[in-house]
Length: 317
Image (tube, rainbow, N blue to C red; front, side, top):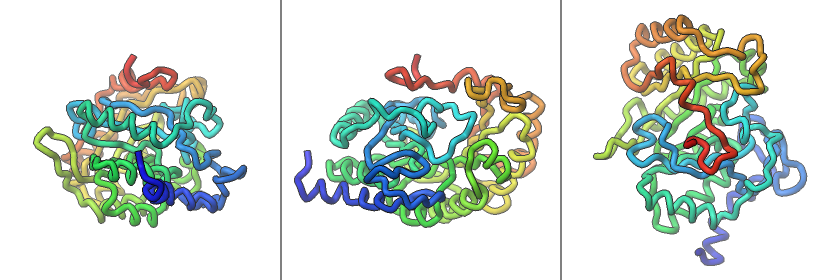
């Protein structure tokens, strides 16, 4: 598939994992050896799923879905994560480690089937592997739209380095409360890192998104926020940051799809669905702040976004 010199070019970024500072945790772990750091991941291409995902925002999914690559062992450990089967750092990597050539073949099949974008899901601790995949695809003459689908816990230096490589940023802004971030996601200083990363994404892309003739996004920034049960103040603070520090013209994906996973089924606050009055209060602030671009989920959405990564296609049952 590639010449020896091309393989050297493709795999060169993995050298950075000898002293890993890819995400804000900056573990300095040697992921090439037996000290994998917080995420418990090495240099392998550990992928929970590669699939045509049709459940993203309409401009992301497009007509045929986006080719999403779901990396294992997220650098955040949200107790309520819907992708818990692959996101937990204790999840088994057996059967998920793939050769890069096989990954490229799978991606190319999906691109040939009509997908125009390649999305990297939970990429923050897999930046070298992500870059290897992009370089390999580009050397193959493939130039899809690259989507950086992140939880927002990213280093601003990393986001700056991706300018010109990533076409679409699709970050979460999960928290504007570091106490919640630590309590629910074991993530210190989330607010500082996420807000700095979003400001850099906004600097690069601005508020406008650019779509092709088929309505699929080619360039832009879309910010997601999931409203959590009992945390209306956190959601309002997140929306206010975006409106006041970025722009109310930014495209927002406001999500009501929270559904308690087995891990939080008995949780005092997280063990229930969102109340209608909670979501309505957040929606009222959304309107008051002047947001007018993006997508707002219906309150019935929890029934439609529950993946199962034990299946061949986690989102199609």
